[in-house]
Length: 233
Image 1: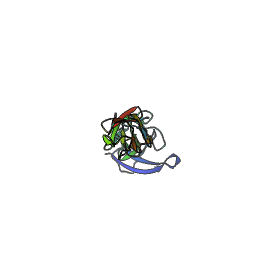
Image 2: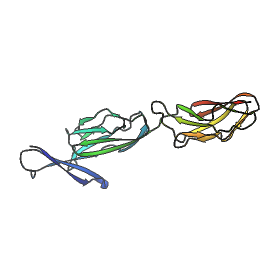
Image 3: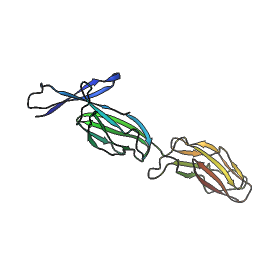
Image 4: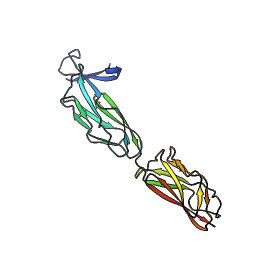
């Protein structure tokens, strides 16, 4: 007959540790028990780029009540919801009491992801911030294709959204964006800015040059660029 019980203990530095006590045999619960402590062996707060593996890969240590490593204990790893994927969902602790998830690849959508290591009802939690990747797209949100009089300002500001790659197209915050007139003359107010919390950036007024016909403004963010066009009458 086998059973188990749990308790809470204070570890080094006052950290809260969960303890599982396990016993074997056919006697009562008053027989000697062997406590098992599960604790993080790597940092529990992590960060990385979307779609990539975090470093270091989360691992935990299994010890007895005296701090001695315990080998051969099954440790299960789980990722919740849209928290990416793991290489090793479960495994036995080694001679040093260690068990690792192998690798944890973050989801493609930016935001918080979580992973849980578990032995019975005892858990250790890891949290990672999945950050947007490099700039791959500049989307023209507003101000493209306007028609105005040569030499006059256009009514609408030039607006863009800056994102990383498919499939998530995560907005990129705080990236520098520049607006540069490349044909037709004229000028753009507020030609340098940065993206906001939604990845958006907006220029000041675009004043057309003196030439009749198509005029263009180039927008750059990172190594990516796109053009706005307007027609001057």
